[in-house]
Image (cartoon, rainbow over all chains, first blue to last red; front, side, top):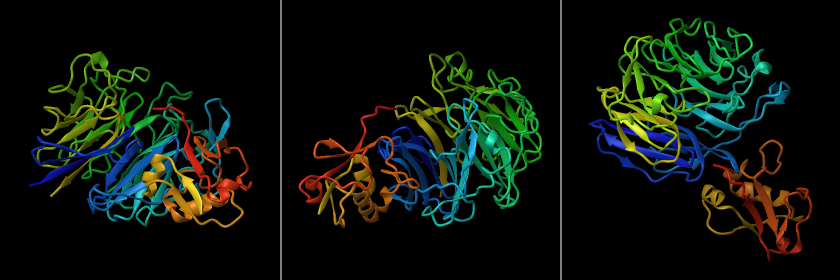
Length: 371
Length: 99
């Protein structure tokens, strides 16, 4: 019988939650890397017991951990993220130019085909890659050295490259997103990049329709239809049907189109999930009701999913990397909150139950579907 | 032997318990101790001092003989009791609060 392994990164460690395919009874691990911030951990699609974790600390900086046994044991691997060549500068809050400075790894995206190859999205925004299982990391500097780079500004969370999507039909094509620069695409395996933000409209920047400068929070794609992208922007839920060449707003009837995560059902490419958040200053759900919204039409028409979720006095946030889906026949949907809850729905969002309720603030949730 | 005390998180990362003892070639300085420490425990590279600049990370301090030596030059000789192994060189995570 199939089983699932949920990888949870929190402000104070990582947790591994496991269950059989029913997803009713769960085992919750002890904290791994207790006391450290775990921005993200993720398994290799081709070797699910090979996991990578981003471990960081305000005191001791960045470490990368690797597991060969599905998270039971870990070993530290390479943690040197040195920008390629002259690091250069980007725009700072006060309008001056500020040197590019490595702060942390936000997101680790293992290759679709090689367990030793992993992409890392970092703050200050850059894309790194290892091809030796994490021992050494090298920057794909075409991102940072894009002509618009000096104009990029950090959002409140930092100038972070947080989303990496590999096109399963074209190994040369990768999509990334940076707060607050926007979405970018490479069609040559990461050497050169160009912004793909046409159609985005952001009132908070001097030119609302600028080519770069948009605070993209998350991108999502269904593997069977990689030319269709969904985006949760700072405000607005967007859709592209041409690999990011152009975007249309699909916020429709959402109670708020601000939010962080967005994800796609494992078997239905037009079924999309978001978690509306009241506003950029009030990082909690509208009306104190924690509601996941699901569209079965690829956007515009959204339904609230509330069964099992708190519908009063709830003021948690759900961060951009904190939602995932499994690939069991009845698609499971998972998300974690700033209040330390991790919820699961084993029926594509119709009903929810907490797996755990009192973890440290959740930064990321990934799920692995195992034989 | 040079004695080094690491903060708990770095002991966990390096997989050590208690003090670390290191053979360090003279002169005994912050730099020479940290070089030897990182040679023995490569996973500590970047956690005490920056990979590129080799500067002490902001919330890490160096104490010895009841003195804060954090602002001493990396190549300045450390006190004799440290060089003779009578006193440990202490790497300390600053009391800096945070989340």
